[in-house]
Amino acid sequence: MAAMKKELRGQVAFVTGGSKGIGFGIAQALIARGVHVVITGRGAADLESAKQRLQAAPGQVDAVVVDVRDYAAVAAAIAQTVGRLGGLDIVVNNAGIGTFVTVADMTPEQWAGVIDTNVTGVFNVCHAALPELKKRGGGYIINISSLAGKNAFVGAGAYCASKAALNQFAEVLNQEVRHDNIKVTTIAPGSVATAFAGGDAAKGSEWKIASADIGDMVVDLLELDTRSLPSYIELRPSKPPKK
Ligand SMILES: NC(=O)c1ccc[n+]([C@@H]2O[C@H](COP(=O)([O-])OP(=O)(O)OC[C@H]3O[C@@H](n4cnc5c(N)ncnc54)[C@H](OP(=O)(O)O)[C@@H]3O)[C@@H](O)[C@H]2O)c1
Image (tube, protein in one colour):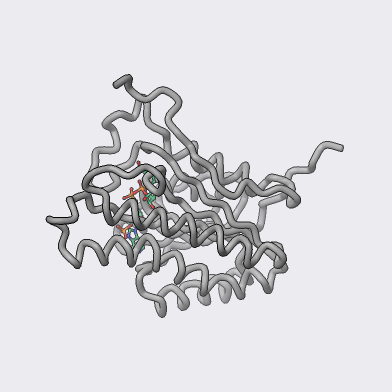
């Protein structure tokens, strides 16, 4: 029998780093499926601008300033989401930063910034969200990792370490919560056309992955039959420049 696609309309999603890049693309894809989306980030102006640009029904998007490194702020934002929208079904851990300098040149603050955001930030959101997902009888946590979690390169000591840690954290979490009907998927993209780490979103956009493609993948995962779980997905540009 063909699997029925899961109905996403009316579900509630919390998307960290939804003001720009990949998070914005994911928020837009969820909105198109009728999901109520809460986007978060540190910058209030960027969040407000994103809220205006997202093509949503009135009241379908909330924008909340929250730094994922701050556990109390994360917990308050999750509580606010549940208080306003009645529950939580989908969590997308997308917020992330990259600082690309050699270990010798990296400051302790740069190291901590990357690890605190890309690893501890994900723990903070998961820890605050899990009780709410359980109250709903299940849910979905999607983490945006990177190919850098497996592929080491010079100048990416903190970034590669953070994404490798995220990959393992997600595997553990998956095993801990799968019997609570909570799925955990980690998407590890290659180059995506965004302004990540001060880059130029337009540069290479003809061959890089588009944020919208990751949004489509997230929707595909959420619509997949509950019995199956793609737990780790590498998403690559299909035709990167020849070396
Ligand atoms: N672009 C790529 O090629 C690529 C490839 C593989 C994986 N990734 C991963 O994809 C994710 C998104 O990257 P992107 O390319 O979309 O980057 P981006 O355009 O720089 O967007 C990052 C988002 O995260 C938010 N953010 C950063 N630090 C935060 C914090 N401490 N608390 C809350 N929000 C925070 C940013 O908003 P504020 O700055 O206002 O806080 C922004 O909304 C990251 O985890 C990144 O590692 C990117």
